[in-house]
Image (tube, rainbow, N blue to C red; front, side, top):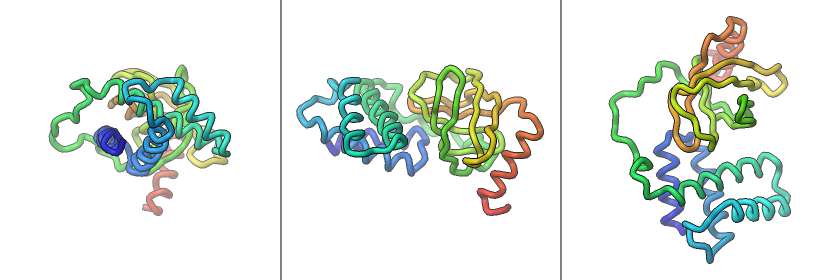
Length: 195
């Protein structure tokens, strides 16, 4: 079991998942696999995910914990079914990153048209990273809505997928209205400590 968890964690980490999420995925993967000791990895599916979530709910898990557990266990099941694919091997180093904007940690619910609720992990003045198991392709156009602060009115804008992998996507904002850009920039300055 530990070898499989380590392999899954290496995969998650290779996909630029922020470290707090990597640790959470690791913990949930261990709990999930331990809950079904007699099931071979390639036989895991929706039934085991649902049973695991029912058990978590019965032990008092919050709605957010259940949502996080579903995301992590579905990612693990997907990985176990697809781990032999060559495309899941880490890509070769491609030179320096092309990102020009500093990102800040940004753990929020993000509503995405046609996808529903997703979870973000970081934000910059030009984009956001969302976690989703939905298949997204580079170039896809999305409509997003999220709150910068929990009591603020939501920010609604368009974005394009610029980076996609099986558990999430990097999105670049498109045609941001000046007042929305100003709100994002103010939030980022505050999050960076008033820089």
